[in-house]
Length: 334
Image (cartoon, rainbow, N blue to C red):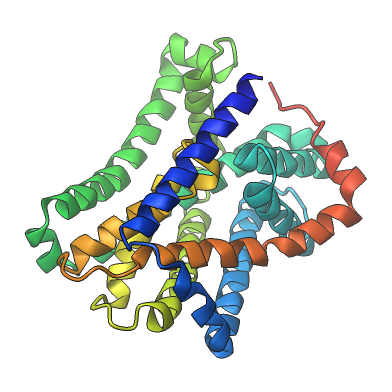
């Protein structure tokens, strides 16, 4: 009953956000059908999105290979499509998707359950870290906008601080886990709780991957390539849906990461409405806040395209449904 209540609240938040965006002319639903009259742009956007899925598969596959978890690349691609489908359409979203990935790694290498679990955690961490990296790098070329808008300067500061502090925190936690009994108990699983679990996974990630810095850098670069491919869809859609908007490709590369982060907030299903509002707000600050353009329409179009491109995961899931359900029953390592 409680889950149903919270789901209804999230749906209400999403509905309210979408209605507000439409009323304020930030979301132009009439611009959506325009894409159907530009099949080349639409096809290119689909190809970019599917290629981004493939790059995401390669990223996780490399993390698995580091610890000799020999899962074929084709199998990893199938799992990524299934998990994208679950993230988009199924209850539980990211949690259910990660359970599927965990189950498959446990089946592939039962003796390396911890390494498999940490590969999933590290994949998520690298994806988030690369978003902040992109925001930091792109911000270096947006000095005029950053000087004009204090909020944009603040966002850039958050990005730069995050990519500076995160590696330091990882190293400090790793050293504490080697020398301080309290942190040793956390890593051994003697202390339970969400914060303890995060600390444990961070320490184990450093322990497992610290001798493979070169591969980790490759994985990070792949993640940034994936984000660039996805942002390519925004740039393509902008040419058709908001042709008069003054923003340049670098502007969309700065705005999109913050919309993705906003979409992670658990206040609406999949961040629906929240991501669109965040994207529109950052874009408006970047263009100087003059005429109102339907920037939120670009993000909603991307969301719909991403959902459609994840539908092959539904076909794969239906074919291997019993196997997927079986692997989801696999238990996490202690």
